[in-house]
Amino acid sequence: MIPIKKLDRNAIIPIYEQIKNDFIFAVENKKLKVGDSIPSIHKLCEIYGLSPGTVIRAYEELKEEGIFSSKQGKGFFISSVKLEKKLKVFLLFDRMNSYKEILYESFTQYLDNEIEVNVLFHHYEKKRFDKLIRENLGKYTHYVIMPHFNQDVSKILQKIPKHKLILIDNRVNKLGKDINAVYQDFKKDIYSALKANIESLKKYNKVWLSLSKSKFQFVPSGCIEGFQDLCSEFGLNAEVTSNLQFKQINHNEVYIIFSDSELIKTIKFIDQKGWVLGKDIGVISYDDTPMKEILHGGISVLTTDFKQMGLTSAKMVNKEISGHIPNPFKLIRRSSF
Image 1 (cartoon, one colour):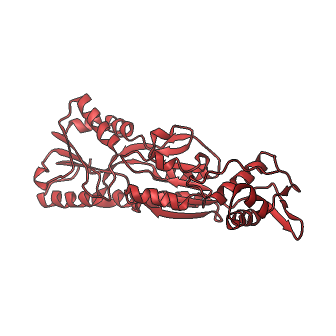
Image 2: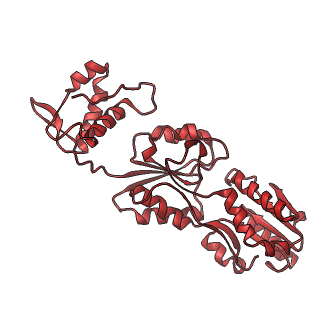
Image 3: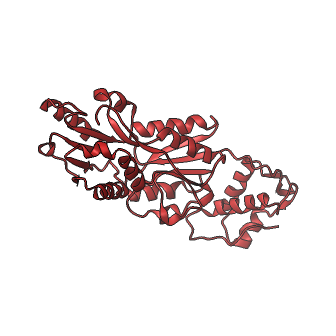
């Protein structure tokens, strides 16, 4: 029996990987059973017009995984239908920072020590994102990916088989909901968290949302939209800026700040003015880290639970849970607000 479907020579997935996948599919669906003979390398090359090297690589990897065996003079046959393939995880972050460490540690600590996890970074560069995925197709059992782009990257992600893909921290709507994802709903999350604290916000003369011009800081468009909707609904005097100037920082205003470096500069400026943080002026940072719990007596944060995100995505790798799962988000009140 030859269970191979039509091979796609224009596909991103290599031919040898397509051959492997078709044999594995046949085993999983009981179209091949232990003892069944497999066409010779020469026969497969002849039928599909393939080079021997391509077929040899597919057969050798299937032997390494214990599915194929061979006997001198008798060729190849199915030796096992137990697909106990070692899990290998391709983990693609935007960049490493303090809260990614929390996510990574939670993710890896839950997984079995024998599971291989390789971490790479796309640094918000779409071309690099595409290249890293292309170069690693077919090499991993799972692709856990943080698609931090305000541009559409669905065509890139469609190259990955759906059953191998797990999105973290951000959704890609064009992919639909039949893939695994643990995500922030940026627009809804910031709106709901600020609404729960609306009376405190109303005490300030103005509410600022300070974005960052840095290429190393991702600001989801949903955050801006949710902030603007909240301020419009409650009639707050508000402004969004991507270039906060210290001359703009005024007494009795509150600043929601994305960039950690801008946060530090702002706190230094407030100290120089002699203002009391949380009384004379308010500061809310985006994304919690252990440092922010103790910095200047505690910095208030709008944040998702990165430890929970790591745990949920690890459970998806283990097939304990599945689906499109929103991650918890809240405003944690500390001394700065």
